[in-house]
Length: 192
Image (tube, rainbow, N blue to C red):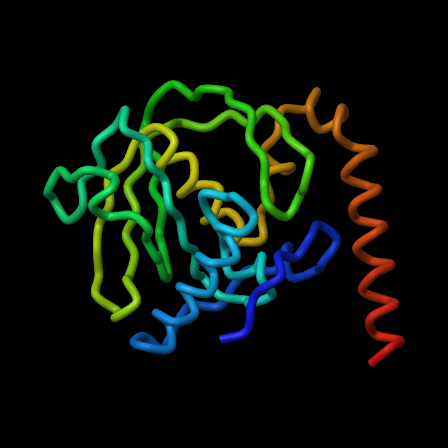
């Protein structure tokens, strides 16, 4: 499979809601591996299909948060035993709790970070590469990553979730990135 390039902010696919995954099996597993490769190259912990130009409800992640033990299909497990993961057609339920504020970044926003408030507990219903259904209960960084990547599949970006002061602090950088991306896309269309 071809190597993926992570789409920067300004690419309209990042604002589009992905389509449900309908085909499972070797091709989806191969797609997930290619996405993981792009994520590792960019030194990330999660990557959604829209970030590589695919309008799908699909994301991959490799989160090793030893502070919290995830529960997969009703059984507690070590993060290292289930990572990396591919999650298709995920439905995320954020559990009740006090939200915490942490600094987040995103591979589609290189060099841009901001404070995002999230509850660090979630339940995720999803299908794996073979189409088998699973339920993942998670906390901490894993819950934050799941929410962040699921948002991407819905066309919601981390800048939308930033605190208002951080939106204002990063506005110039975000606009600059958007303008550069649009200019690059126009130039590429002219060459084609």
